[in-house]
Length: 52
Length: 253
Image (tube, rainbow over all chains, first blue to last red; front, side, top):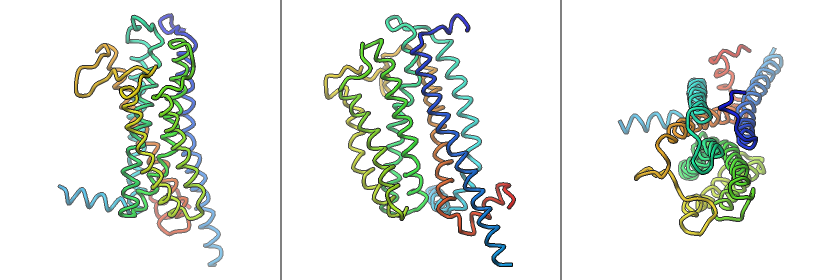
């Protein structure tokens, strides 16, 4: 590690916890979006099969 | 100007327009957030000098303070959206008010945890039932209450209206958080940043705080639009506009 960045563990753990919460907040909507998009596509396919 | 603003506001009430607006804005907001975080973190962890009393421990404030401000700002945004929900019954406002709650809860959690970690070496304890800390914990419970209440209703629109009432009741906690350090004798320090007067913080320590605060605000915007877009799509997944919207954004069926 760069000598200037050798801060106490609690400084780094604060940043690590904040980063973990932010990553979780950022990833969750992306996964949800993919899930909804595939659901909508499936729904649409089923409905178009019903019509034919 | 006012008429155009009103028109734009009303147009955003249409799910398809809102979807397109969100899709266009989200990548920009995330891009700017990452730039803000990169500059802010570089300054916070590398450029700014240690504090003469706290040493490097004070660097925690560069995540703690923006998270605390955002936790409160999110609640104010939710209150405005709750008023729009109850008065004009605009569905996109309802959805945004409800999807802002988990984001506000996340920032409150970051604020409480980083504050506790800083408190151990500085105050000698992780937690004290001090007015500022307790009112912040109450804010977390209010956020969780709003999320729970909204989820308890099968009819999402009814759930949003009931939860909006809770948002309006809970807003009383925001001035309590802000003024707690003035109204009561607290372990938590008073305000060091003053928008309308001189700040007690050294000017050399301010730039990273400004960068991190702006980055967190942009991040909130991106997260809110993502969550609101998802909720809108989920609620309307059997409606025609959703397929049209997905086609427009490059999802071939």
